Image (cartoon, rainbow, N blue to C red; front, side, top):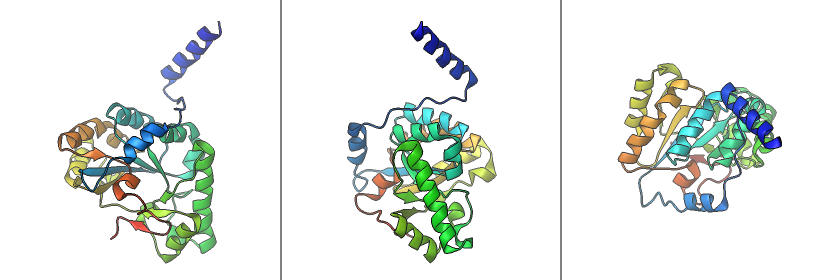
Length: 239
């Protein structure tokens, strides 16, 4: 009876399309395997997604799992509070999690205490959802300054920018976004996208297949950067 009841609840969740079952934590073996990729010796690329988690993130996670690809997600704190199970699944499937502020405001426009509060609240939201505090952050809009860098250092965060952005939020076209990603693809690239843009999520199977054909390893930012490079208060990639 209990098994039948649980099966019925699972089927109902699948039909609704909004429930997300939390994935188990990434195994130590899986994390060790990812860390063994040496991007100084092989072609690597880091796909990064901002502004989630959101319902659209679920389909993206399905696609990444199917293609055995890892990515880095920079999460907005208030959305983590809204979708903790999606954040938990993202971390549990071995993707890297970063801090993208709590309310997605331009951090240099805020006073010092508010910058720290934006980042600290997000650290706690992510810890509550995933069990871990991030070691990376990405400033909303790429807006940063010395005060933001100081706040990062205080909270143990490295700042992650990008080598190229798709502007997918502006393009809103599946083929155009896919073409842009592949245009930006080069060894050691850090490509900025948004998992809240449905068109980006939709084009990812095509992109992942093509990147594999080109010989790329799809890795997290930390794997791309290499051991010991992402220290608190530092910026990667350097501009």
